[in-house]
Each structure stands twice: as structure tokens, then as C-alpha cells.
Length: 311
Image 1: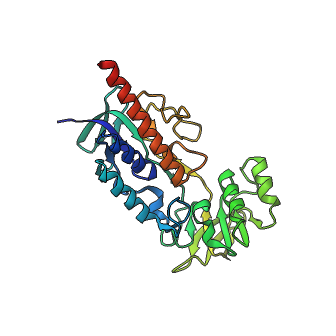
Image 2: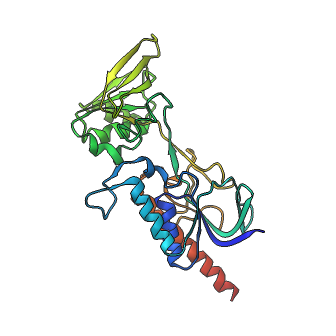
């Protein structure tokens, strides 16, 4: 038997939980399919010091737990299931997790974006202990330290430039002999006295036990290997928006869902997008939460307008 809903939210980071909170308070009884690894990228972050309302900071997983409890308090149903298929060809939309099927009048996509990682030894073990993919989130913890940024595009330039606010030195490791970044971003980084570059090199290992102590480098031209001391490694190789399930939505050139600003509406009536899956610019927990609020309100207004038209 198909389970019919007025609203389903796919995803469980700040965007998904905030959408669930607002929808719950609007008596829409939203269903949140939060995934098996719920909570989004903040589950990988230790201290969160830039989320409003927490003067002394808060652990990323604790913040997500509080958001989930708050959404549940107002009637959101949260299921730890992984969505395997979505049909957006007609309303009500179909959503599946294995054999379980739901139909929904409105759908909020809050599946986030996944940071690209190197997949080298030491990376997983030291994630959150010197390995990061978010300078804005974690740069503050590396005041007067020496850091490595991996990458050569705009993301790497942004990360490296931002980190110079705190670090004593930032070394960009890039596999080629010139950056892929836009000229203005590359020039800004190269002109910064705190930034140095190791060209034609790749990180093959992240070193350290309890915390990062260095990286293992390989010169792609000579094949020579070396160890490079550092206090932290920041990935600047971009993010991948988690949009593969949602066929039919308009995406930008990097795969982010296009919304009709200032709303969160997509090109399909009844489908809304919030958070990092639709945000290629800011990628912050607070902006994701704001978009989640907007998405819930946009969906509520659509449902109310359609109900009014039927009366």
C-alpha cells in the first residue's frame, strides 16, 4: 500500500531539519527521509563556532541531534532510510526506499553536497583532527599554524586565501604547473605573502596518529617522494551536489539545483531545493538552515493556494 503525504523532505542536514521544523509547526506532518548517515557534513565537524546562538560553540553532531529533536517535537516523522528512487514525472511524486513507496504533493530536496576527498591513507583516520574540507568551518582552530591546501581551482584559492587570516603559512599542493582557477583568484593567492606553492605534486598520504603532522608528496614529473611537515590539510578539490536521484530538475554547470530566487522553487511545480544541494556559493550551516525555512514556507504556501482553489 502506498503511503500518501503532503510533504516529504529528503536529507537531514541543517536545511532538511529546519524545513521539517517549519513544516511541522505548520501542521503539515512532514516525513523526513534522513538517510542512513544522517546529519550532513556537520557530522564530520568537531567544534562549530559560527552557528548563531552558541556563544561557546557546539559540536557538529550535537547541533544536528538538537535540530532533529526540535523537528520531531513539532510532529515531523524522521526515518533513517536511504532513498533509492524518485519519480518527479507527475504529482503526487513517487519516493522509494527499497520496497517502501511514498507519494507526496510536495518534495523538498535537501540532500546536500559531498566534499571531494583524496582517498589516500590517513585521510579518514585524521578527518576532524587536522583534515578538513571547509576552511570557513575549521580555519579558526589553526591560528599561527602551517597548513596545506590541496587543489588548483577556485575552491583551493578561496580556501588558501581564507586560511591566511589564521595560519602563519599556507602551502598549496597542485598536480600541474599552473592553476585551473580563474585568473583573478589565482593572482590573489599567488600575491599573498603567506601562500607558497608546491607544483607538479600530489598528496599520497596524510601523516600523523592523533593529529596531522605532515603529508607524503610525490612529484609527478620525477616520481620522487618526500615528506612535508604541516599541522593541517584542507581539501580544495570541490564538492559534488547529491542530485543523481532527481531526474528532470534543472541544474547549473556544476550540478547544483537551480532555484527561482528569492524562492526555493525548482523548474518542477511542487519540488523545492534547500541547502548545499542548491548553494554553490556560501555552503554554510546557517545559510542552509535559512533555505530550509524558505523551502518549508514555499511548500506550505503552494499547498494552501491549491487547497483554496479547490474550495
